[in-house]
Amino acid sequence: MADTKSSGELSRFLDSGVYRFSNSNAVFLDPVRVLNRSYTRFRVSPSAYYSRSFQPKRLAPESAVASDSRKRKRKSKKPRPLNGRELAADQRHQEARPWLLKAHESLLGAADLLSILSKLRSCSCSSMESSDESSSGVEHSFVELGKLWQAPLYEIILNFNQHSDSSSHGGLLNNNQSSEQREIPIFNNLVVNETCDDVEAEFLNRHYVLPGQSSFYMSDLGQIHNLVPAESDCGFNLIVIDPPWENGSARQKSAYPTLPNRYFLSLPIKKLTHTDGALVALWVTNREKLRKFVEEELFPAWGVRYLATFYWLKVKVDGSLISDLDLFHHRPYECLLLGYCSGKTKRYEHLAEFTPMKDNQVIISIPGGYSRKPPIRELLLDCVPGVKPARCIELFAREMIAGWVSWGNEPLHFQDTRYFLRDEPVNRFR
Image 1 (cartoon, helix red, strand yellow):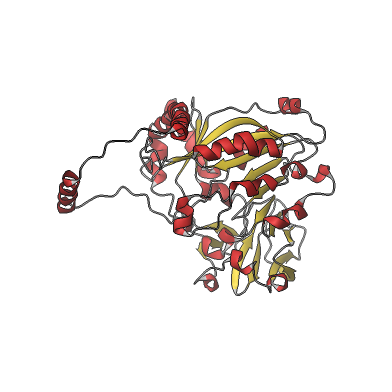
Image 2 (cartoon, one colour):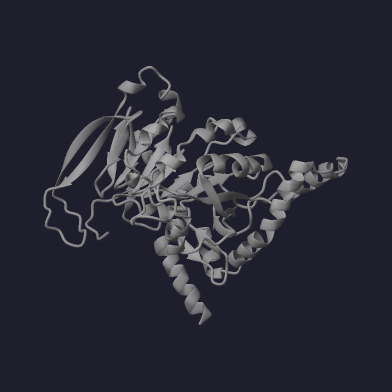
C-alpha cells in the first residue's frame, strides 16, 4: 500500500515538479518542471538551470593522504566565544534545526525520488531542440545598459504568433499562423505579453522568451512607483520580494549590485497591495542583523504583519546537504519570511477564509544559478487573500512567470534563450 502511494506521488511529481512527503513539513521541488508550466513553445533547459555541480567530491588516495598531512600540521585554533548577535543567530538556527532535520530525513526516506535526482539535469523530451544559437556569447548587462544616456531609446522587438484558424478545440495548436512584430521601449516601460502563448523577443541581437500573460518593468528603484495602480482593486494580492541584500559573497563574485538595507524601506508595498490585502513573501539571508532589521524596521514600515517562516533547504543530486547543517557562516538553507499586508478594507480576519499559514515549512531543492530562488507560487496560493486568480508581482525579479508582473533592473536575465529548449513544431494539447 505504501509503495502504491509512493508511486502515485512520484507520478504527480514528474508532472508538476512538486513532491509532497506524507506526514512531513516538507516538499521537494524540481524548479525546471514547475517553471515549464509557464511555457507553451519553449522549455527551461535542465542542464542550463542546474549548471552548478554539487556532486560529492572524491579525492584520489594520494591527494587525500597529502590533504590529511597538511591538516595535521595546522595548529587547531580555539573557537572564540560568540558575540551577542551571533548567539541570537545560533538560537534561531537551533529552533529551525529540528524542522530541517525532519525534512531532510523525509527526503532520504523517499527512495523513489532519490533514484531520479541524478537525472534531473537531463532532458527526457525527445521533441526538443536547442534554442537559437544567436544567443551564444556574452549576455547583456541590463544594469549597465539602463544607466546609459541611450537607455530611453532602446527598444525590444516582440514577435507574436497569430493563429489564422481560430476554430481549434482543446487548445490544439495550428500550423496555419502569421506573425506580428511590435517595437516597445525596454526600460522604464511596462512590456506586456497579453497572449496565452510564449513570445520570442529580440534586443540588441539577443533573444528572450516571454511566457504567456506576463509582463515586466525594467528600471531602477527610483521608478518603481510607476507600477502603483491607480485603483487598489487593480493591486496585487501576492507580492514576492528577493532584495539584493548586501553580502560579501555577492560582492566577491560580482554576481549582481547590492543595496544598503535602508533603501528597501522606500518600497511602496502598501500602495501595491490589493484592496483585499496581500500575502508578502520576503527572501532573507541568515544574518542576524538583517533579521532584526526586517522585524523591527522593514515590516513595520511596509505595514506588514508577520505570519510564518519557511526554509529553503539546498541539497546535492545524491540527496545530501550542500554543506554541514551546523556550519555557522555557510548554512545550507535560506529563509522566506511571510506576512500579511492589509488593503483598504483593513480586515486581518480576511485570512480566515483561506488555508491557515503553517509555520516552519521546508522547501527542498537542488539549487540552480547563483542566488536563483525556487518558484514558490504554487505553495502559497491557498493562503493568498482576495481575487482569484491571484494577481502576483515579484520585486527584484531576474526571471518571468506566466501570469505575473516582474519588476527589477534585470527581469530578463534568465529569459535569454540560452536557458531554454525549443519545442519542435508539432501539434499538441496544453
